[in-house]
Image (cartoon, rainbow, N blue to C red; front, side, top):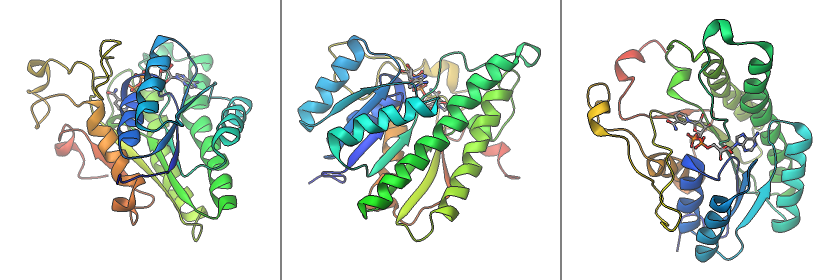
Length: 262
Ligand SMILES: NC(=O)c1ccc[n+]([C@@H]2O[C@H](COP(=O)([O-])OP(=O)(O)OC[C@H]3O[C@@H](n4cnc5c(N)ncnc54)[C@H](O)[C@@H]3O)[C@@H](O)[C@H]2O)c1
């Protein structure tokens, strides 16, 4: 018996990094996992084969979740395959997340907000519609960040979007009251998103060098996808059923001393 036996899960941007770790972890707990990504390559094929060994109905839904058309196409494909969605994990991000203040132009700003705010919102809205029409309710989880709590140079657009998500899940918890749907964020610290070797089926890839992290992370090391995936498991299973509209910070204590006023 797994904690998520038969639950149907869609994870955006799941080809690598944290999303890949979430996909394998939830499949290990009996979930039927649909992975989305804008890219399709040898890593998406490998991930699909790993999750399908745990649960034969795993699926891949290629698409861009920063546009409404893209979101609807991904959901249409997921619903055609699985008929129901129980858990949505909004996880997608593009690689160039840092941008100096004066180099943040309209194109970059829109790209960040279109994926990280608009995309996460409309994917959640579509998921909630499907969860209500199934009569089963569900769970919505958004990947925020430590950058939603603290300001560091070059992270203003990213941090603004990630802070918006923490407000967004509070709004969704209120808007979806009585529908048996919870909406929460997870705010990771510094997590290694490096892929393992292609033939390696582990949840985690290579860790960060601990020497670089022990000075500023009280836990003495960087985080791994499994640290975030276990938090997703908590919020998406019965274990976390009474947590709603909240953000779970998973950062090894990295910003503990800066969080009192939040
Ligand atoms: N890695 C960290 O240290 C860290 C820290 C804090 C928060 N986070 C958050 O966790 C989440 C996962 O981060 P990660 O480091 O594992 O990312 P990653 O870069 O390893 O993977 C992101 C995936 O999203 C996909 N993607 C990009 N744009 C997309 C789009 N428009 N539609 C669909 N897929 C798209 C990419 O192709 C990629 O496979 C993100 O929301 C990120 O902001 C990560």
